[in-house]
Amino acid sequence: MNISPSTQTTLQLFGGVAGVLILASAIGALLKWRVAQGQPNSVIDNLNARVNAWWLMVAVIGIAFAFGKGGVIVLFYLISFYALREFISLAYTRRGDHHAIAAAFYIGLPVQYFLVWIDWYGLYSIFIPVYAFLVLPILAAVGGDTQRFLERTSKIQWGLMICVFCISHVPALLTLQIPGFEGRNLLLIAFLVIVVQGSDVLQYVWGKLFGKRKVAPELSPSKTWEGLVGGVASATALGAALYWATPFNPWQAALMALTICLMGFFGGLVMSAIKRDRGVKDWGSMIEGHGGMLDRLDSVIFAAPIYFHALRYWWVP
Image 1 (cartoon, one colour):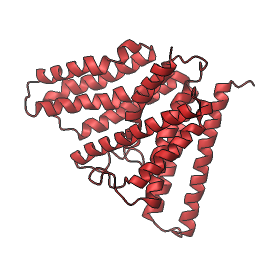
Image 2: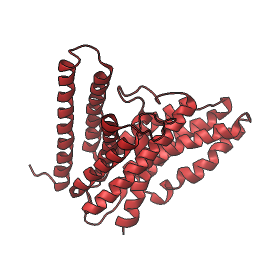
Image 3: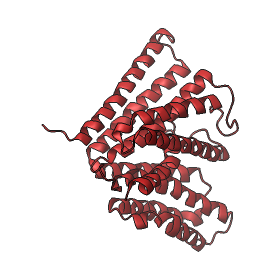
């Protein structure tokens, strides 16, 4: 059976990720046996829960990739839906907001992903920032409730921008026509996810090993300068090493990785600030060991639009 070069590269990437997860699972099992001696241990149990959650997430992404563009768009449509639900559930809303919320879920969300599906860049790039941005407060105003109106409307607008507009830029990568890279756009998504999520993991590891100075103790007490520098530098090197799966040369891959890692870090800070404002530790409990959907995607949310437009500006004729 003939396997296309793009499929071979995708399988190699997933094989590498599976190898890392196998190693992590083995280390977790060894720590549970030798250090915890089979007894409950918060740190080790949290590590094993995170690894198990990663197995599930990688499996889901792999299945979506197997179905191509349709599978990826459906996956991220569902991700946006659950992310928006988490965001709105923590926002202060009133009865007068019901029409605006319904429009966000049942018009804004599906229309945005339909526009990505049909590759209408001229509209999906402005549909939410322009049209939804204007329509949502109109619908809220029609509700006739002026109490904390600006705050309530802004939260719904923010939710739609973060959870739908920004996340939809991940499947939108499939619409880019990059010369010499035809039929391999799934690898653009793989690069984004591996580098940004790898940066999160590496920042955690470096922070646990060497972290002393807090970056923003009021927002995210676990983030340290040592973790930030070590994690971003390591993930940048990882991105450079993955250049063979992208349209980039090594230095371009490194620069792109550095950019999206920094955007991911700042995205995590912004989302942490929102959680602190709402008085919660996690956005939800959907993913064991990872909190809610937004807890896992906070870095990707800010990195994806920058990554998409950098590719479209410099690599698409």
